[in-house]
Length: 435
Image (tube, rainbow, N blue to C red; front, top):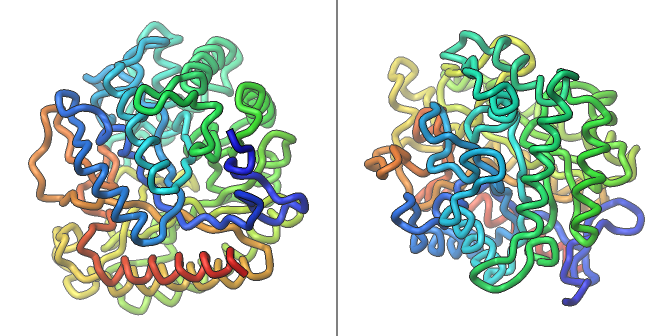
């Protein structure tokens, strides 16, 4: 195996290299790839997955952030179904093969993967399911609408903050990490922890209030079993520099991450046409400050999630900084009183396109100064539509996780104006790599 095929951090910490050349992340979130890669008896659609991978490659996308976890049981609400791990240490082989097919397809299209190993939030099972397992399948206090968010986040954070169960929960998690890292791909025979298609292993999606020891201990464990691949924390970086450093200032956290959700943080009101300028100004300051924080640590940074809702309506959020939903902005200001307008695939994306372009332009300028290493937009829905009929597991597979309204933020394959913005940005990053 050619070691140069693995993505590495540049010696000065300013960015990434691959095959001895600069490597910028022209990425998308494609969490559902594992589900689509499963055989059709388990709700998958490999033909669709292959088509969508090619579509993204044609846009210049070279990196996908995917789920490498989905905890059962399948009778729980708000979950990816079918689950990947039905109970501790027990996997659905057909779903594991979905990950095999996904990684093989990505490799054939010269993409790399960020493998997300866990989730603070409920839509893949995540931390709360580990806590429930340790507590003999205790009932999880799921949030309902705007209610019970604090109760849920406290419960999920017991995964690492409750000393009476944390050791057991971490042991179960490490068993999962090892099972995935040592997997031999049934499609191409490559061992996951020796396959350069995997750029990095991510501890979790958006760990909240995690202790420093957890970032250090978990990243050390991951790196020990996959020394040629990178490790990332999956942090939103929405709080302050202290929080940023607590997650990222560890030997085996190779690069930094940030997420940006202007509507969730009540910066942007999609029902107000004039609100776009506020969102753009906030995003500019946010990106600049996180770039400075990363530079202080001498580590690369990726904007690995961003999006907008289409109308000022929050579902499954709460009032603290733990607010959580990820959406795509369509032009809801044209129909401010129509709650369904923002979910319609035919609704224009003028605001969203302008917002994406502003973020891409700033990242590109910072990349020219070796201060930013790329981005992953949230999220590619491809051939799916919010109007699709659910599969046998009750899933409509889009870029929208199962706890959210269908059609909020998926980039569809017919969103031509949005795709043009994405492709133009990716083309410019590619030119930067070749300079």
